[in-house]
Length: 426
Image (cartoon, rainbow, N blue to C red; front, side, top):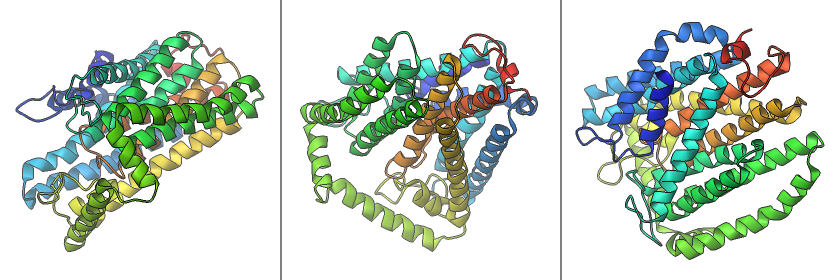
């Protein structure tokens, strides 16, 4: 039941505008998240004992910080101009309590590895489905302009697609089967990203994809594996980058022209407006340094949020909110950097170890993409928060599996053999 609920949650987060209850975007996703949280949190204390100490510590630290953010957000209802909007911040954090314990619980069950693979597959399928709907003009898509898909804004669609791209790339290079199909999925999602018209997320998505392949190339070079793959990738990278720009110019000339203006040193309207928005938000934070203006409150009549994760936390929850958000991001960043460095340095071999290592790299870049995107776009809103928690929970799973393989706890590691419990037990 829990696995089915998580899969339904993944489907629903791609259609926040179509899953409304009482006119609120993403309401069905939130109800599913609450259900997952209630089911998985009951057994989380037992589940945490089966996790490696580092993964259990990370999950506990991140969820503890998230709980404090929820408390501050609820307290801000007492002085916020629009108390109902404070629930936006609460919703975004609730996804963490739903997804991290749920994925951990699923992974410790028999055939947990297969279930995790289904979660990754569901993310890929939904990203491709959304991209195809956008490409054919459904879901408020507009050729040569901005497409929202079934999100409220095009930036949200861009964030979602750019976060999934590294997962598709990781599956593409790790899988021995269906590579042509996965390559088609990668192209489809890139096309959806182009159609979204989000310049920041297009650049971030392409850069994240490049980062993953650079890390994968280093991984192969250090193991002296597939030298031809590295050579072909080195030659193909600039060609694919140029092809991406040509595709953007052909299908979305408005976004291409604005991007060219920014790269040439010009001042695009969106950049100027964001700078003004950040200045106003900082002034509001300085005017209310200890409590902020209240979680989820809009920036006057200008924008629903500050378009920057840290500035928005400072504006809405003051210095305490900024401190909590900074701690969460720093802890996650330290964890993913250590995961990437370990993956590049360690010399585990074997088909399964290779797949796990590649997925660690893919999920790490996915988390990184989301964090960077929220410095210019969504400010950790409830419509996209799941695209942070899902890759993070998958990273925790693959990193824990990686540790287990390294210490030899799983004596005969195969993709569909053994259980998650065996992989995570000390």
